[in-house]
Length: 260
Image 1 (cartoon, rainbow, N blue to C red):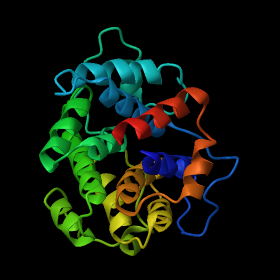
Image 2: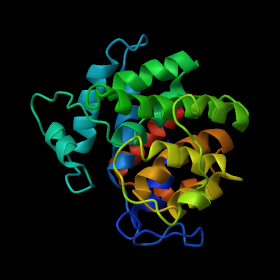
Image 3: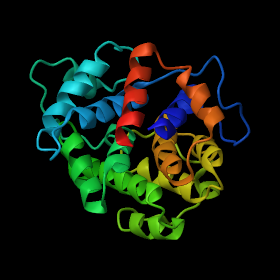
């Protein structure tokens, strides 16, 4: 999860002020935690609280997302998700927004098979994003994370992801024209390509931010996959933790201890 959190924090200051270059300071006082990190941690908590057979995971996802997320009303929630967050009767709202994909890295880290990664991602996604493209974006991300942490070669991960999306572009070919987009269809493929063109974890984050768009979310998705595949440098992990308050840091540390 820390990979996704690093991507979110590093990309936070560029969401509305895109930086189309890989040359920038990764962490500055202008960086902050957004809904991407908060919901990633909420999903991690839901997995920890779920029964061993995951039968109550959707219910835990609803409970934990609301419980973890409600104290942060200004962290960047989209309009419909905000309504869901503060509703006493939260229902899925047929969304294919990229929030489905940015929060599921923990599912891939916990899963013991590709099929389980798919099932876990669906369980935590369908409670809000019950539209096929939203479910697909979450599933692709969770499967990529699972394959990355399992030691699959990058070529195999790419071949699998091409079953979800047409990755028929390069970062250089879209950097000048890619624009802010909150859909899975126009965020997940770009985030995956940022990983596929990377040479290491930090390079993947820089790739993701360099194309512009919804920078914190693109980088959170890329960071989740890259962190699973490469591992996360301790210095970057330590720096990112400094942006988390005590409550969020406690969830992260408990998840890291639990998943092992």
